[in-house]
Image 1 (cartoon, rainbow over the protein chains, first blue to last red):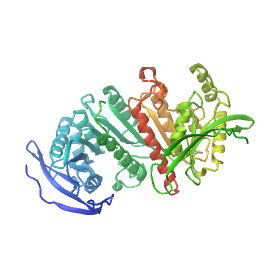
Image 2: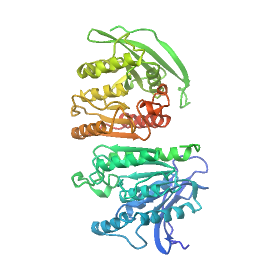
Image 3: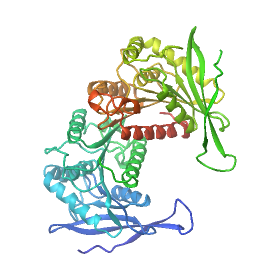
Length: 269
Length: 269
């Protein structure tokens, strides 16, 4: 497997705890090439090079625009928290929509091919878990909008991740069924998201209930679709807009979820 | 106003941060007498006597059993976090149901008299905010089951608290309307709670939405009514049972909510 070697040091940041031997953390972020079958894919990987040893691994699935500056920003943020994080590439190397219309076509194609979508995300997960930085026993997947939907499909496939998070993802699926999943689920939902209406939320909750899963759903009042994305603007009447409050709270919820996933002793669910 | 002087020191606990001058925290818990009009009420107050100065104040409304050992335990837990906390007495001094049947009659009486319920809770809040330990600019109200319902009625009344939390409380009201409330709302809900069915959750969300409030609702998968109460047993088929996971997570959510309420600079909502 070849890897793009365009390694770039993004930032040298002061370690949060300035103890001896923790002088500085060095955030590494780079494009990485991997494959699903014969299809070339290009993800984005980040980790703190000052951390030694294997650490929990987090897969991030992009929104309908594909891997973007916003996706990479989130992957970097996860790396600064101490995780090794990979942005999965669902669309394929070089397939990067530049307009909402093109993005809609790509997202629609993959939402219409759930087996294919699951396979694309699984290929990224498998690549991540083989990284020398990654502890395959401590992994999670998350995603934004379209990527939230994709992360939930990964859960439905029974992938061996300890947890899955959806940030304002669509919750419906043509093939419901979460019984194969052994991890925990956290759904972070804009309560006014017109793209994920109450009936869809109710159906998802029923799907999770019937699977006997450990699941949680947080509804953020006033938040609409894409609430974590500063690029989504401020006009909630459009149905997608940034919401600083929900962004901050959902990131905190994610951190608490990861702390619980990765710190606790293994226990039956 | 007379106060029962049965002050008792419940515990001397090591301070979490063992810095100079923080040798030991001293948890004080005591019965306190106050009134609503001419009606004698008896609450339970707790605070850390090693903390100097005014601190955030948290009102706790009991479940259908009235103030119980479980209520006092929660008030003590809030005191160990650094708050001054008061268990409100809705039922009246000496009115302490000892059977579910008697508890149901009391809770039913007050759920059928929302103006009276609001007045009882407000009297407790006013008493708490006049305590020398309390900073009236930093206050919140919370409650369990029946007490969650009562805390939400306090919000509907427009009481001057920065935040209100319901733990597995009933969310319906004969007099919906949250526009008078200027604080934030957090609803912690058992997703399988048969006493708070989905239609009731949906109505509440619509009420909060129409008020333009800052609100959040966390649904805990697998949790039923009374999920925070170890005394509720483990048989979820009865509709009320303890759930260690939801208990722990909801307490964490409460702490994060309080941190946000009481640490942040004042800002328009």
